[in-house]
Length: 339
Image (cartoon, rainbow, N blue to C red):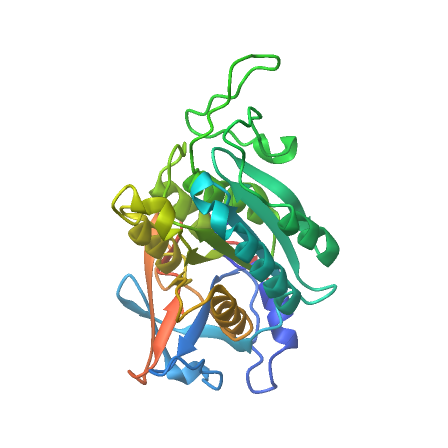
């Protein structure tokens, strides 16, 4: 489906002032993006207008046709938690902070959430729901697998039906120990986007809690990023790692920081690293603030003939402000028609 507009225009019109209400046209191809803006001190800028932004597509100026200081669109948010052995000592903090975060960010009867855990396999432990009790139960039950756990946990059948490139699934009744080591981070992001968020409308976000190390994924980092981009998923990467767990390896997880940064930056999110100065609770507060203060921007590409990945550049006239948004979208499918 990509970032093309579906129900967004109808919902958007409700929240606009008379001066901002767009005139909708039939058969207009519209691309939608969300953006958060902060000043040099890190404060969210919430009072900008359409005229404050400059938009380009592949270097060509674009007219912003639809604009709103929007925080009312329904939100579907996925919590992706790394439950590999290296995270054992961090699980309690992750569970507690995640529950508090969702209590604050989810609006009853409006927003929804789901939970995926991943270590040697990815598992949807709670499908999309607006029931807070179900989400909290799923998060509270998260733990790392025992080194002696022989179970091979798979996604429920409705989600596991998506075939990974080259993925092999154990035949029913087969014997032999399951692979214990592994952290299929890329697979978890891929599944969240392809098998869960692809059927959702409105705003979509993933909060990824991990040390950033991937071991054993069937898909590549590039494929995971592309899936998030195609299904409008903003990824907030939270790098949380146990220094003691990595001390014996003499490092901090290799390229893990770069991995989490790419996932966030290329989808329009941010990468955070938990530290004494920046605890997990404070990071969740920042993410919540951004999700509640996003600008909705729609434009009609001046050149609709080009297919493939198209680069978006969005900035403000005020160079002191920093704009955070996706860096592009895929135009290999015909855009939806705004009506």
